[in-house]
Image (cartoon, rainbow, N blue to C red; front, side, top):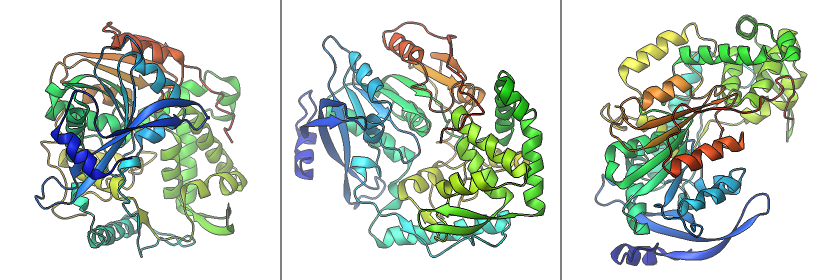
Length: 478
């Protein structure tokens, strides 16, 4: 990629075509290649500091196919911390290529990720949670708060203006990207946290957005999900299990199974021997650990099958499966708490309103996963003094920008009703439900692609219902 000097020159001489780009051959993880362009522009690391250093914001542009007349389509990855270029290399490569029939497709790397990482250092704190000793939820949260305080200081010492890593500043990056591309408007295409960023853009720069495709949406005050909505998801998962005789026989009452196992581990944590790359490590499995791992596994139904098998094994006092295949995927045993700058700062900045926090804390007292679905939030909420966005940021967007909202019924991370609520003040939303789909729904069925193309062509797809294949919930993906 060209140097920052070229990016500065391009900002002064827009010509209607993207500036400071180099032709590249972009190759997917599967080995498929396409000719593309890699570009970048400069932005202040902290737009609230007039003396801020400049950082490079990078992207890859896939040129539109012949006949495409729409504005550039900017892909916003989830996380926070996901990479647009990384996503384009993975399973969604085919969809990125398809979307070129509507305009240039931009795999955008948000500040702090991918081509826009600017060598941000991760923080390895001096705080560790013991692997073989029981700790309370309060002690666990306090350890992470101490690590977060240490890491903020570490990033400042490294010259990183960590206060610039907020969703609001990423919205300004989108505006700069639009100008850099020489476009009057862009289409936003996002998933999960990427929709959170898109909604902030819909509030702040509505005239710069032509339309938006949002999947598995996270509202501006939904960084922390309501435990009651996770409970409702578990009911939907049970209904899906009940459609498969073998799964129904194995898991006749998921909620009761989970509660029973949690009670067992709360009364007596289980010492297990975990297989890792470095050998076998002892680990005291607590109720909290199971809640955290399950929170990560319920994103998609195929992964939820792992969580179900995990609970069933522990219910029978076993540990071979969880020790050999699960724990090491979630925890770096024997290591101190490590935090990523972009993802930590973005979630802390978006935060949560006091009213929602009170609701979360009340519901978490009896909810099966407690307050762990979005750990380390809300546990780290407010830990950085003077940092974060205010409640005005967290109000829902309003307007009439056309939006396609795609929601999966078996999404255990964001939930259909909360997704629609997040966009309730938008007047022009086409809501499409994808039965059996989870959080990562784009590649579940070609029908999802078809409805996206129809929306981009201006068709009314509101109320469409798609059914994706339901995986065997007794079959493990590894």
